Every structure is written in structure tokens, then in C-alpha cells.
Length: 535
Image (cartoon, rainbow, N blue to C red; front, side):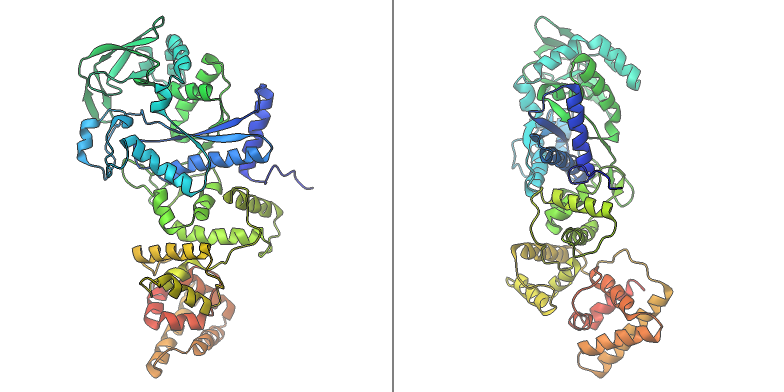
């Protein structure tokens, strides 16, 4: 029995369909189905931060594919206060702890109006380079324009009920003593240190006192100032426990994913949206975190961040989109070496899409084709690109330098009969491989485990190549080819298997240029260095 395929057959389509069905059941108009992604502005954005926005964009694309208008809102919380200094940033930021990042000078080259501006721009730059469409909103302007004033008023008018509910949901009692709102102290300019004591309903003002607070392990002293601030002028912000709900209601958000680290906040916000603001909360999907290769959570504050900019120095936008669109659930460890893998995986995905690989599993084929479509923004090409193994280009890049480096590498690729035209895509891939070769070891070791028998065969091949070098001035490509073949047969192993194994060790691909010629160009010393790392 053939199962029904929703949209393009991916998890993205399932979410989009669920959103549409839910909105119809609620009875809300489907004129524009807005999805949201929050952009942190307190530190350098990493792959996980980008993933939130990219996946939301994918859902927006899928909604459009189902016939409804949709848009991604990229929201930067630049009124968030600086809690600690991220690794690598100057110590003078210590004087700004507790201040909204929108009000802190740019600590990185002074190229932007504020700290928050700089950090947000990094993520927006990545979205732009991935060709992702979005509308950008930032907290400083949203609060300052009065866009949330109505929601703030309703929330603060129900503060007593909220305090009890927050305690019930998450066991946090502080909002029974203080309002869920952080004024910016007019005197010292800090957030969090000023405690909102009373909401003056008639005047829509908050009275507060700057008493100090604890941020992490640090005690932040208050300046002692007392004052009042209108809720409409952007001189403060709602606490996270209620702020999401205010945004959803004000902007009309229908979908927002979230990480498990803010699950408690989302639970409270859902209730605030439904009960206090009378706005059915958006559909959610909970995603797991990206971890570093040591299994630690990627954190802006501890500095184990793989930024989108670093990824795009070595990998194509397609490879990054593949990483982020493959799935939304499940914890994944990620490091810079994954770029090489994802570059090759995208080529495989493309081969499946165009039928160059025979895939019997129809479910897998449908999902792969759908994934390829979303990676290409539902505007997939009509024919596949040239597939040249990334590590083959990296190896070649290590041989050449100078202004004509790309042309020399392309000439070598032509010689190996793996490329025919220097297209813009191939030229870009060569430049990325040059960056990798220049910045990292060109003898990158891949996750490949050999049997003892395979190790013996590879050692024998290397030893025979040594004899060839001793007896000849240079390696003969045809003799190398024959040597590999005969050594495999002598050890009762299929030559095809050994050729494939050597391609994997040398260029991380199942096939490539004729191996004899490639090893001759690579040279015995270089070949031995690479192969020895596996045996």
C-alpha cells in the first residue's frame, strides 16, 4: 500500500501540514502564516543558533508549497542584558555587565552601532549567504515603538495570577514578589538590578528600585535609584517567562521551535498566551542541541563555537543547509571536520535526486528528493552539477599557489577526467578547498577502520612502491595500477575493494581519478604519509 506523501515528503512538510490543520481548527484566518525564530544577541552566533532560523524558514517554505502565504520573522533580543563576557572579547566589557546589549559599544572592531548589532549581524549575514528570506525585528525597536504595549499592560494587570502560576509550573517563586518585567535603571542603565515593584495601571507606568541582583556567580550592586518608567517607551523588557507570549500575540506568530534548555519558559508562555492574552499559542517543535566533539553543549560564553562564517569559509551553503535540514530532533556532535563529510553527502543527495544512484527504498528516495528541494529553496536545478571529491581538490590545492592557483588545480582535475568545465560552482568549490588546504592539514584523516588483512595489503603496496622508486626515477602510473591489482589478488582480496579503500583513505570518496596516475602525481612520500595514518 502506498502511503500518502505530504508536500515533498519530509519532516518539514509534516510540520507545515500540522500548522495549517491546527489553524483551520482554531478558526484563525490563513491570510499570512508567520513563523518566528529568536536570534540571541549576547554572544557570537553558532551553528545551533542558525539552525533555529533555517529550520523555521524551511517550515515557511513548506507552508507556501501547500498554497498559503508565509514569512519568517527573525527576532533579535538585543534588549537582553550582558550576563558575562564571552571568551575572546575585551575585559572592558566588565563595566557593562547587566546593561542591554543594544546599549553597549561594539567590542569587535567598532563596525556596528552596538554590541547587539554586531552579534545579530553575524547571524543575518549567514542567513543572507544561505539565500534565506526573512523579516528582521529587534527588541529595542519593537519595545520602543510600543508594539508590545497592549500585551505588557494585560500581563502586568494579571501579575498576581501569573506569579502563582509560574510557581506552580516551574517552582519559581520570585514573580510572587516582583513583576515579570525588568526596567532599565534610569541612573545606572542596567537591567535586572532594578526591581519592578508596582504597576500603576491608570498611568501604565512601573515603579522600581535599583537594589542589585545576582547574575550567575556575580553579585551586581544596584545604584539605589528609585523611579517610574512608562511601559510604552522601551525602557525595559518583559521577563522570558512571559515575553514570548507577548510577541506571539502582537505579531501573530503561528509556529516557533525551541530548544530543550528553555522548555520551562515555553510551557509558561503557552499558558500566558492562551489564558491571559487570549491568543492560541503557536505550534512548537522541540529540538535537541548541537554538541561539540567532546560532547559538551556549544556555548557562546565558553567559546567552543563553530560559527556559520567558519563553516562557509570551507563548505558550500548547500552543505550547511543539508546539515540543518536533515532532521530537527536528536542531539548531534558537530565539528569542523563534518564539513568534508557534508560536502560529499550533498553530492550523493543530488545523485539520488537525478536517478544516478539506484535507490530501492521508496521512502528514503522521496525524503531525499524532498530534502534536496528544500536545500535548493524549492527551485532545484534541472541537471546535476559536476561532482569532484572535495578532498581530491584539497590535495591538489596543497601542490599549487599563486594567482593562477585555481586554473592549475582545474587543469589537474581535467587530466584526471573528473571535471570538464570551470563553472562558477566548481570555481567556488576549488576556492573553499584552497582555504581548507591552507588552514588545515591536507592529510585529513577520515573515520575509516581497516581490518588486519587490509592493513597487510596496504603495507605490501607501499613497500612495493618503495622498490619501484628505488629502481625508477619516477613512479609509472600503469605500474602502480597493476601493482595494486596484483597485490590484492595475491592476498585473495578483490582488487575493486582495495581500490575503493585506497580512494577512501586518499580523497574520502568511493572513486575518483585513475589511481595510478593520482598516486604518481601525489608522490610516494605524500602517499605513504596519508596511508600510514590508517595502518
